[in-house]
Amino acid sequence: MRDLAAELDERRARGLYRSRRILEGVQKPVQVVDGRKVVAFCSNDYLGLAGHAKVVAAFRHAVGTYGVGAGAAHLVNGHTRAHHQLEEELAAFTNRERALLFSTGYMANMGVAQALAGRGDHVLEDRLNHASLIDAGLVCGARFQRYRHATGVDLAQRLATLEATGERLVLTDGVFSMDGDLAPLPELSRIAAAHHAWLMVDDAHGLGVLGATGAGSLEHFGLDAGEVPILMGTLGKAFGTAGAFVAGSEALIETLIQSARTYVYTTAMPAALAEATRASLQIVRTDGRRREKLAALVARFREGAGQIGLRLMESPTPIQPVLVGDSARAVRMSEHLLEQGMLVPAIRPPTVPEGTARLRVTLSAAHTKPQVDRLLEALEAAQGAEAPA
Ligand SMILES: *Cc1c(COP(=O)(O)O)cnc(C)c1O
Image (tube, rainbow, N blue to C red):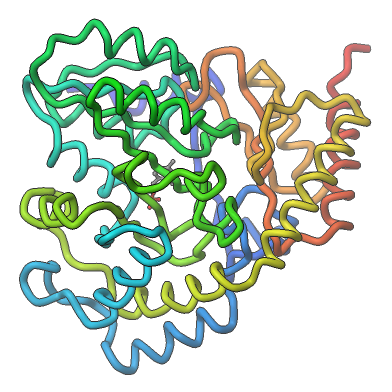
């Protein structure tokens, strides 16, 4: 039997130990974690909808109508009117024939890969894809390879050398979760089409944030369902609720309903959550000011960070990592920020490649300009405290 305690001690000694903080109350910029009042720059609640009055009210009201638990899987009798309406609205929002709800994004990714690919097939993924996409590719039983980050030529070369038989599934994040950059989707879509491969985009961090109506990376690039046949979106980020969906053709969605195991063999999300998400979708679609404010905060942060010599990444999104390099140094800087009342996590290997530890700043439309300015001051102080004497 493994000596778990010893393994944990060793992990601690290497500075890789992970632990939770306890948050009191609503996910919003000013919050209390571990008994300390902080300004948080780490949530994925990009539009400030997790505690929005209309979303909360829709949830409360729907609990009165539907109760709490769905009580069964979608294919048994857990699929309510609320779920069905949300699916129709998500399909319209993403300009696709159908959409299908999953209980989490992780399960949506696993379900699609398993339903479409298996032994004798091929899955190709961007090296920096989210862990849930990587796991989906590894677990589905297909041959698995990773191509160089956001590099179409590498993908094209790999596709060209595959034997003619079997399905080909190309999986990519729309916005990369640890770097904040965008996948080169127009190029990937051309390459996938030329090689008769499915292209699936996981737009967890693009939906709600990018595009004129918040429809995400595909709207940003002007790509339609013909160019990107499979779109996955999560509801726990910009939508401020929980769960996920896959959008695509009628045949794709029916195939998932028949055979995606993470769809078939799990309890439907609570109907009230679907109703709350309908309320948040309405805000996402119609309240462009939230996206404008978010873009203004991103611009302000990048400009200020440049002035104090921080190393940013090529990110046009609310994910604005500050590159530090050394893990221990990133952790010390994160602790220094916390002492100044700023909650910014240090992200270390194996979540990011060796030698690229970073402070992962995320911004939300719920932040204020003065809060962003205070973060910049705190980052400057944390950087100063680390400078060689
Ligand atoms: C958060 C995230 C997921 C997982 O979604 P959950 O609903 O939290 O399980 C999948 N893909 C990406 C890119 C993500 O950032």
